[in-house]
Image (cartoon, rainbow over all chains, first blue to last red; front, side):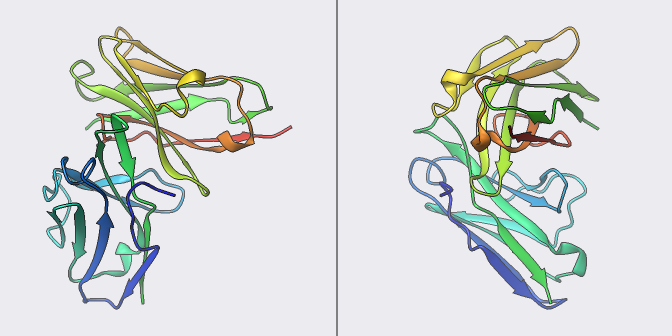
Length: 110
Length: 114
């Protein structure tokens, strides 16, 4: 029952491009910027994308973010086995006056 | 590099108080909101609340009646107290920097069980 909707799973083979979607509403994605996180089992989330499409230092340019209206997307190109992880979107929600998160997408590299 | 190191009790009985502290190093402490988020299999990532360096707080309405955040700017630490815990509060608790965290603590697994 997360506020932001993500597909529970995604998969692709090494070298391919995969896209993960994140759907929200006018009170969150529609009026605020989006972050994306990568999380490995037993580890804390790591910031992958901030402010819709900006990559922190050290994040490969294989990772890219975009946003349109009330939806956002994370794209991973040149997929590698080490990209197998859970991915979460997050943004501020004006109704909650706090951050909201997607339910996460488990990416499998076949 | 910013580092958040958190600690606190990991096993609680129903009705007890959860208490966690997060220490920040490697970056500025002032000028940021400092946030608590929890993650459970059933509810995913859930915002608990945030505290500014001046002590101003924001709480998730669903938890507000049981949550208290505090901050110690001299020690660069901030803390979470959650009263009257129940099984539904079992989760991994994270501290983080920013209203939507960019840097995260390592997480503390908290289990509530009689």
